[in-house]
Length: 93
Image (tube, rainbow, N blue to C red; front, side, top):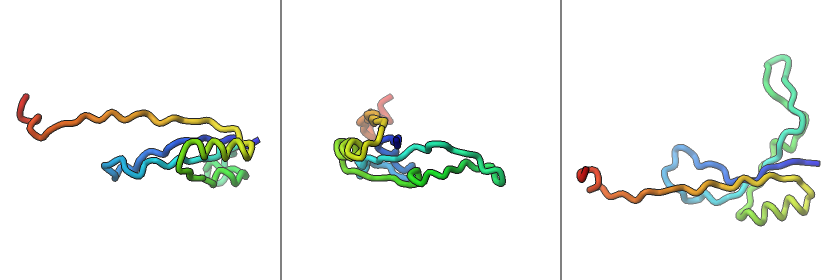
């Protein structure tokens, strides 16, 4: 049976905002990775590892996995703590 993980990917380090960071991704895990003897790279004959499915909500991703009988691990995103600061705070201390 296929195994997958459902998560929200991290934002690009070049981004400063948190907009457009609400896509859930279903990504398949590699079943049996092997080491390529020529180059030493990790490879696999499982082509599902190249597939990443994007969903607009967590529920849609979970329903898809259940419908297709895919075992999944759900990785909940950590809540970001934002500290509201004023420019004047730089001069008050």
